[in-house]
Image (cartoon, rainbow, N blue to C red; front, side):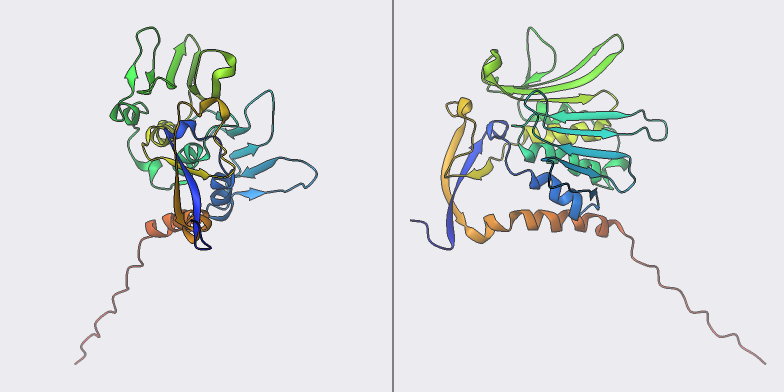
Length: 257
């Protein structure tokens, strides 16, 4: 039985079937760890966060006819403007794979990775009648679509080809930096289950037959302070990259005769 120090939680796998989760998993670190600014308006059910250089804006808001999450980035140096969007039921931990890469001062310095590689390593396979890679259970798909002047990445999770079977969809424009797309695909391919509330269970109804949901118990403090630990960890990233000050050498006294 659960006590005051133990709570019931649901572990959901594969993670792309876990449902949206708590948006603060994305917005709180951006605001508190990475200094993205917000202008709250209590009369409007939207969140807008702007990066410190004012080049990127993340918007989150209920939109029954479109994606709930959108991130737009202005042109920078020789790179053109780019944008990404995620549906309401995209797990926030997968979106965080993208935003964490965006705000990590170390990732932009690394060689451009192949966004497909994390999926291949996780056993995703190439389809016979379409491009891109599909998850081992066939429920998630990622594709880099290029045709003429069109260049973009699509990702989706669905339990069937019918419109009612769609769980979530993501769009990433072709000018999106490759290391950010890889941050997204790495989080998507991660085999670790995602934690969700057990009662009431927040997993979308149309995926409960396909999802592996295990009700287990965790220390209440571990669950309660998970977001705070994440905020602290991301805030410490930039501190770890700051080089230690080089001590100044004191010149030796000159000899005089």
